[in-house]
Length: 465
Ligand code: NAD
Image 1 (tube, helix red, strand yellow):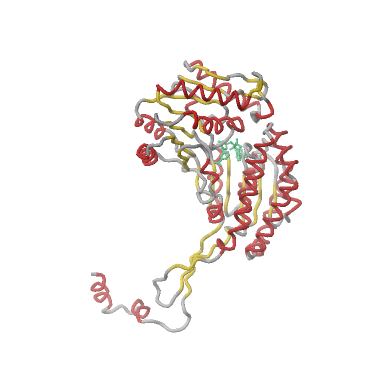
Image 2 (tube, protein in one colour):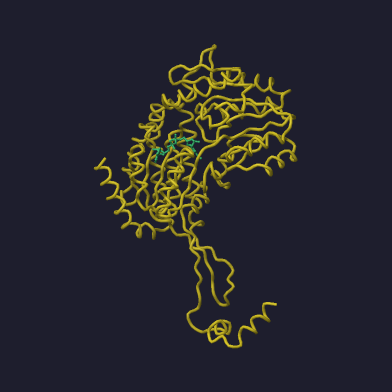
């Protein structure tokens, strides 16, 4: 540990000295770095996929689409737009003869923590805006995905000098050693509980934070929608990565008279997607990341069943494989309705009055996302205007994250700040307001504002009228 501490402190000081060079790099120089990163990621894609499979059996297809391609797309967005985003923005000035500009400058020394569920994407996607905005940066991958952590180290060390971008592997001790340092900005992805620890540490140095946290993302289904069309969207969101997605639909609200039809379509989806001749196709089902989380999910399931819930599908645990599961009749007091599920269990709740659903959602911490399925714009508007969440998708789940022109992030308990695209560039930039005044000549107003004030107050009061 002592060795780690020394290395962390040495690199932090090195980056501090080097910051002024990185800060002054042009858009072209930053784009070149991002393009090199892009090329190396593509070269290492087979190793990245292998690492994600070793860590928790992430299906290769999901590894490429949700981890590698997501980073590549974000790089492409920056390459296309960085010149424009870095341009100072001139705004109208109230000072006669002066010019007012907003200049984006880097926040400075940044720290990025990744969670384990998308351990590659959640480490590199925030690095893109950090580089784009001209910062120096230290990365801390998740120790719960050790193989992905290793390949991330290889990529970072091959491409960057440690005075610019450095990476430190490790768990809580390393995280705490990093959090002791006076970074200018910290981007943390992880649990709400640890997010609070990060924010407390940041407060010691008044560092700004981006906290990308979790929550219980509800789904509301209006009576009229075509269940055959919408169920695959919801079930995909619930069971991809075995439910280990911060944006995954957590639980479902549906009208009582539609519940059985909904469940039939979910069962049908699970069979078509994950079973062959009645046997679970293990290759397409991500493993639960570790024993602790398997036990946590088992406990949530057992507690719900003990309180009267019915297992309508799945409920089977085989090593670190948790079968896609559907629950009905889940009481609100059950633990599964109190914490983020973060696994392939879908509680299906019924409602008669939409206001009751809204009340329930508003009684819980603000979720990272909310999903409403309805063709009735009044219902959609009512739900959106009476609730809040980090983001929302109407008639689908999770899709708002794929929109480069929408900010992605949580609100209060589900997070603070946002990133992706220009929102990431802004998050890692300090918008410095600069007024350019002509150096020569004074105008009458300037003279008027200065002492002596004798006789001026009366004139001023008359003008204020
Ligand atoms: P976590 O909070 O356990 O860990 C995240 C990071 O914090 C890791 O790098 C870990 O080493 C570090 N850490 C853990 N304990 C710490 C401590 N006591 N002090 C300092 N650092 C500590 O989260 P996780 O289990 O890796 O991720 C799951 C959570 O992340 C879920 O709640 C999920 O919803 C959330 N998440 C959010 C997003 C988002 O974009 N909003 C994305 C993915 C995951």
